[in-house]
Amino acid sequence: MSYPKRTAVLASAAALAGSAVLMAAPAAHAEVVDVNYQCKTPIGDKSAVSPIDIKAVKSGGGYKVTMSWQKGVSSSPVELGKGSMNPSATIKLGGADSGTMTVTGPANQEAIPADTPIKISDLTGTYTPKKTGEVTFTAGVLTIKALGTTTTCTPTNDPGPSLTLDVTAAGGGGAPQSGSESGSDSGAELPQTGPEDSAIALGTLGGTVLLAGAAGALWLTRRNQAAARVRR
Image (cartoon, rainbow, N blue to C red; front, side):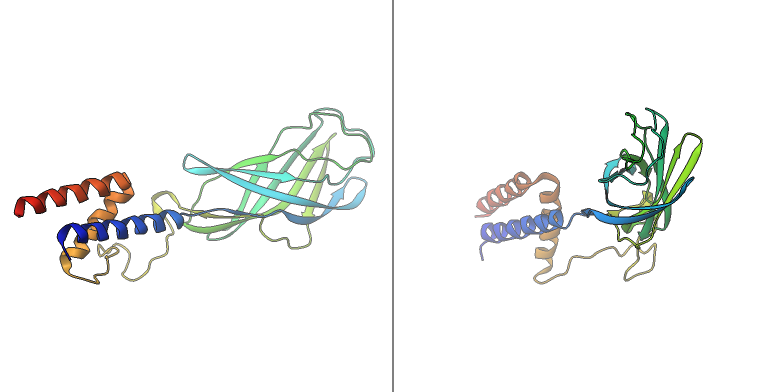
């Protein structure tokens, strides 16, 4: 195979490798989950089922997490005036991380009539990964404070995660080790399936494609073609 053709083949292989890396980028999986809340209220026990949606948006070194209720929960025997009801909730972490995080939100923007389901506004909080890996976010306890009273609503149906997110801790903390021991400088080696110079060229070109895209591959190809003409 001539040198220019060989370079073109390597460029194509590197471009495919770059595409594979981009396609394998971490992604979030969100799912609306029905949560059966059992609520302890000042006037007795109540229950309600609400679909829960949890989403996350990257923000600095962490994520802004938003928890949404699609139906109201609990109720009040008296009208709750504007600004008199304050909600908060916990989200259980699982998978690579553990524990809980807290989400909070504004007081009710409108009066809530008596004996009607209480609509919870979107609650938000900040999650900072402590471990690297796949983390799940599941609805936890909802707390409603209103008119000097506290209502606690606890999921009883063992709901599944509303969000699964691949995260990286600062400094890569908690990342699983494979192969050599932590601290080894062996790194990930490019498998050699051909001559040594082919492996080196593929590794170099692949890095260029990832950083500069197709323009980097075209520049290297033209440079090698010019060098071949000079040798002739």
